Image 1 (cartoon, rainbow, N blue to C red):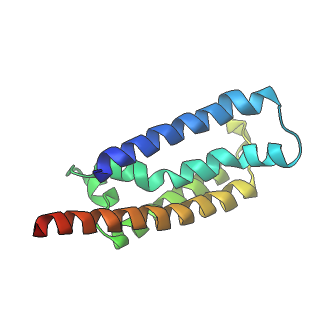
Image 2: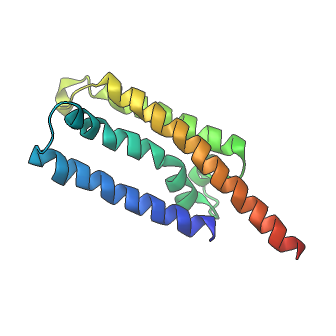
Image 3: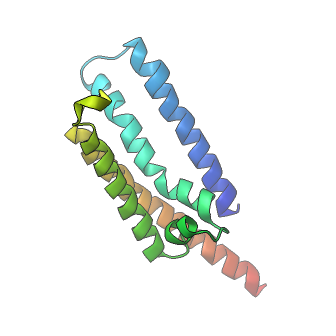
Length: 141
């Protein structure tokens, strides 16, 4: 399977799962204690996991300025995307300290966003490596 359609599917399914958690499962109050905590951090964990997949799907094969920064051709590019994504997540979380936005700052959101991005770095990196190997082996035939 080609990596761009795979990234698109992962991103869209992940987005639907995040929406289900945020707008359906959490508001129903089905869980208490640790279940409520897991549902609280799940959108950040899953959302940060999806960053490289979204970047690959949106920016591969494009040539505008943002695409040049966020497209993923190598492990270095993947690192840049993950670090930029983490920076944006931290800024977003700290902006929630401003009362005007009516949201709450949560250190666990930053912690689990970093866990999601770290996991995504290794998972996407391995998928990309295998994709490149597959393309190279098909090219030798």
